[in-house]
Amino acid sequence: MISKTIEELINIDQERRSALHFGMKLGVATLAASYGVPESFGQTPSQNLAPLPPNWPNKPIKLIVPFPPGNTLDIVARFVQTKMSQDLGQSVYIENIGGAYAQIGMAAIARANPDGYTFGASQGGPMVVQPHTIKNLPYDVLRDFIPVAVSAWNYNALAGSLTAPFKTLSEMVTWARANPGRLTVGTTGEGGFAHLWFEDFRRQAKFEYTHVPYKGTANIASDLVSGAIMAGADGISGFAGLAKGEKIRIVAITNSTKVEQWPGVSLLSDAVPGFVVNGWFGFVAPAKTPMAIVNRLNQAINAAMKSPEVQEKLPSYGLIGVTESAEYFDQLNRKDYERYGAIVKAIGLEAK
Image (tube, rainbow, N blue to C red; front, side, top):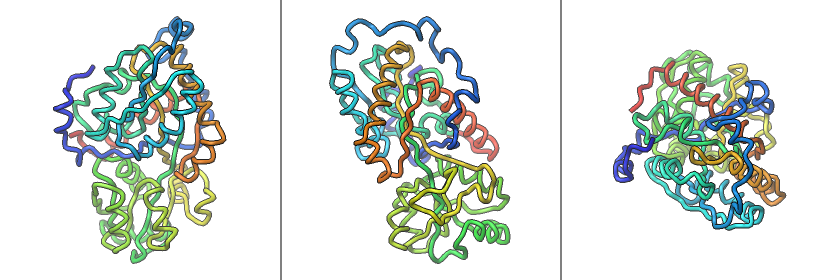
């Protein structure tokens, strides 16, 4: 239930609320089958089978993006906007509602009329990380939203300074074990997505380090170039340009397989078998939105993501397109919710 006003949300300490790009384990094409997709999620079987409401849609549809324009999630939303409008025969327009690290926009989605004329874009941070790191969220992510479609994922990177006493992942782990606590690693904040996956990685790789929190990826990259920190963890897009320009190096990526853009770069799973982390970007609707509408939105989103125009643009943003069912997204969301909740508990991080 929505319990906080917009004014209260604006006053939330954003620096303590960073939870960028939530993660998932790649290579889960059979996730729904493997984990057993339920007949319904938050809806009754009769709602799942119900036909579309008559004449829906007969007016423009609002797509809320809980971040400012230019954010990766905003880019994904704009990828599908035009194609959805053509498919549904009604204008789909974007309303950016940023602030309080997505909480204001997510609250607006949750309290919208569940009539199919408002839905929203979201990503892993607000959906699977923040519920475990932020007290008193103004919504319950498992109760107040219906997953509609997961449309893209990306991979994260561990970048290194050229002055660091290591060049490869194995060298970093070896050095960190021999020098407990001396490895300095920057992320976008305590309790953020990158902080959690790196904490999980270092626990399994059995080494200690010093965490250096930053307000953004640009600040991490700048200190990597200067040598103020040894390593940084975040989405690959924030480091790619400097790495291509040989100002920093990519030490490892979190993907499940090697990627064409970084053929010689290690995978984190080289040091910790099975360790994979990917961020996902998708779309949700307010709870109680009829499942017939959810499934129709899913169909339109997937068609847009499959279009040649969108497929051509994805690699330049470090994104991989996904076209799966609403049920698949529900299971993915719940699985990652449990995963990051377990990490937060394991490292003793208290929600603030």
